[in-house]
Length: 607
Image (cartoon, rainbow, N blue to C red; front, side, top):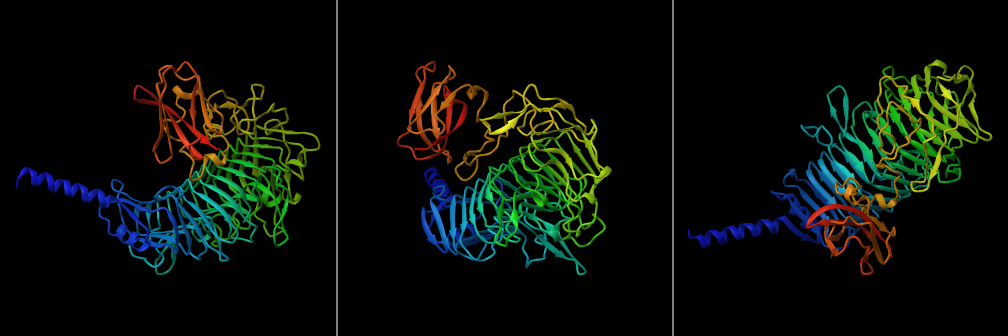
């Protein structure tokens, strides 16, 4: 064969590969056929537009090196209405990106069955229905008990999505699993190692009696299985649909660095053991005490705890009005003890739980203990440690034994807590045997100051320092990700001048148009000193105090497309970028020194 023919054959092969690697579709059947017949990964794009009843089931095992990407032509450019939904069954390494689900159907909008390494990213989810629907469902293949499908999904990621306007039962996200019929019993397994991050959950309500959590992880029958689910960097706003905003019903999960705003209910450790709740912000935002459609009183709350060996650390709670089930920190009695009951739907008493370095400020109530649900719960708490917390408020009691006969006495160990009641508040109420000495609680001024940048009460250089009272647990960071030594401020915030990694989240930080806050080039040392204003930008972006060696800037959208590239002739002078022709959204402003990127900053444009 001549060299020319060889080159031509290689060219045709190269062209064929690239045509199969990125294809455009307007028909769901064609899309599903192309994806399911793919042998080498590829990018499958749905043309921008609105499609009714766009239903597709994908069953494809791709690889990490050659993944499948199913995406809208542009993020938010494809709207799926009617019965539109996607199912991924026995699939791996598939990404769904950029769709707007605006349905009226009776199916989960995205369902994972026995699938792994699936990413659901930068979508908008909204469903108008009268049915109880789980909008995004992660589980097993319930009609297939053959290996390996007796095991559920695993290692999936749900990130940078917007979930909004849920008015009926069901969850925004359900992390479920599968079961194995052994012949004599059914053994349940939860989907493992899934991550839910940088999502915006809003307007879930009104309150249902049950089954309208924004996120449910596990359920009672699989509550003894380990999920290893991570829920982090999500924003929950006006999520009122269930007494449990996030319901954890399995073991070994992490709920961290989330922000809850004006939401009736709590983050509930309802079932399961060994869960970690760390670095979350809870704000009441002056939302009044409410009434559910059934006539019950509902409140903005914090964290409710059942089960064993949990760690509750570095959480911040402000302006909450909850009590009983919904106090900032709620420890009711239980109706079962771990290892002694086979009825997994019960409320297992809290046992071997550590509650440390949390800040409760200006709430209607504080830590509430001993509620027995009208004598229905009789199992006392066991081995609870409450240490190095900071609680201050002006009403009711900072610590209350809700039912006096249920004072837990020495079942709870109190160590190195700062509690400072002001105005009409008291330190302790309802106690018959509990009392505080200076090893348990110190009443002194915490010298907090309100930080208008982050809208939280923070410690100052005058705030007291206490020794870490925990002998088995090292907590070396505070809520903002700043270092915490063995002697530090009580409460979630330790006074520090170092950079803040985890402030309270805002809508700009989450959802389809948010940048990745963990991008390695974001706010590097070389660009930290550069001042970029205003925030958000309107018709112009102004830069001042630019590094003297920077000679080029680029404005890049979230798809990585360069929108503007400008040369800087003299970095010692202020620089202005005209943005009048740019659409609203989030961009990355990249700084270059002689062609090498030296850093970047996130920019919001809002005309």
